[in-house]
Each structure stands twice: as C-alpha cells, then as structure tokens.
Length: 112
Image (cartoon, helix red, strand yellow):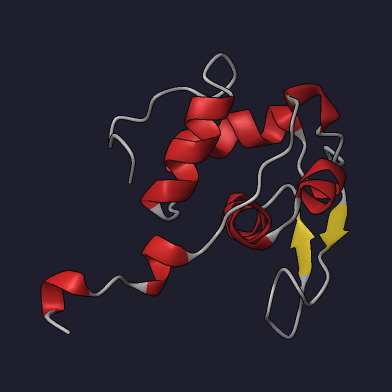
C-alpha cells in the first residue's frame, strides 16, 4: 500500500448531526456535566460562562456526540456565539455549516 492510498482516521470517522436546528435545546447558563462517552477528561463539568470550557465542551459534543447528545447539550445561541472561535476538524465544521448555513456564520479561517 502506498502512502497515497492511505486514509487517516480523520477521513474515515463518521460524524453525526441533528436533523433540525430547532432541536438543539441545551442549557444557556450554569454548569453542564458531559458524559464520559463524549468528554474523556477527569472533570467533565463545563462552566457555560467560561469561554474556554464552553469551546472545549462543545467541540467534544460536536465531534463525538450523536444527534440525541447534540440536541440535549448544545444551546443554539451559545453555539452561534462561539462558532467562529472554535477549533475543530475541518469535516465537522463543513458538515455543520452545510447543514445549517443560515445559523452558523462563515469563519475568517474558512473551514479550520
């Protein structure tokens, strides 16, 4: 097998997305505790007022969550407010932008 024939895990991983933006009904304040299946750190509590924790927790939900998880934990207003500052796999950003173009702005970085 040549290097050109290899695909990285990032190219094979399947990402999920909810059907409708309106199905996102996560909390908009307080502390969110993510399950270990989504966020593999000792302290899985996310303070929604802490921008760094919010971005880290939301990235975990976007990348590892099933639609039911995303609907439960993601708040549409919070997601929109941090979208441009989030670091995530390009395929995740492209998938969400393509599915919800009216809700998620283009970032100055394209699809970083």
